[in-house]
Length: 129
Image (cartoon, rainbow, N blue to C red; front, side, top):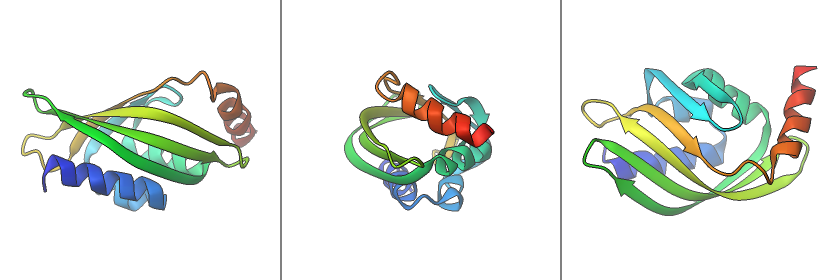
């Protein structure tokens, strides 16, 4: 599978809200670094994300590949929080690929959290209660 195909499957899995489909794209020991959730192993990160989500809609913008083996996926994210509040933002997911470039080894997510921080904290805080 090419890096572009991996990214297409990733966006489709996000849109479907499928933890299983997302996890199938990552190495077992992969981790995610997120501006809202911090650093987590991949499985707990996506369980938390989908637990806080009513709906995800992504729109592919671009894909960048580095000579060092990383890829950056730029997309627009329309995220419906569990509260029903919809937030939209542009995002860049930077994936390190595994040695044979067949799966994601880890992910760093980059976006501005300021427009959605209060809504996220309200929803996420309620989940902790």
